Length: 79
Image (cartoon, rainbow, N blue to C red; front, side, top):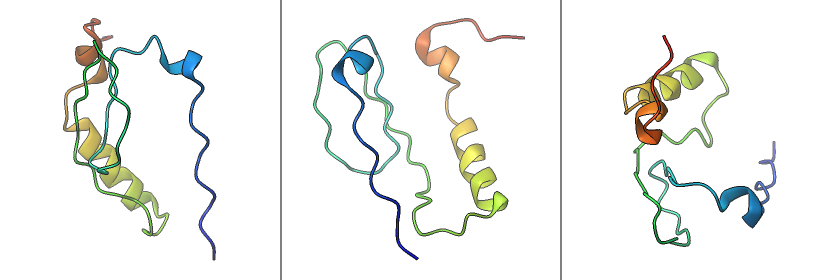
C-alpha cells in the first residue's frame, strides 16, 4: 500500500485573510506572516495509523481538549 500524494498548498488568496495559523505539533516550517497568531497543539500524528474509527475519535478528542476555535476567533460559541 502506498501513501497518498501530499496535498497541494492552499493558494495565497485563500490564506491571506486568515489571522490564526494553527499547527499540530508536526514541526514543519511555515512562513511567518506579521499580525498572525501561531498556536501549536501537539496532536497525535495519524500517519501510518490504522484508519479505525477509534484512532480518529482519539485525535478528535485530543483536539477538543484544546481551546475551542470560537474562542481563538473571539466569536461567541453557539448554544
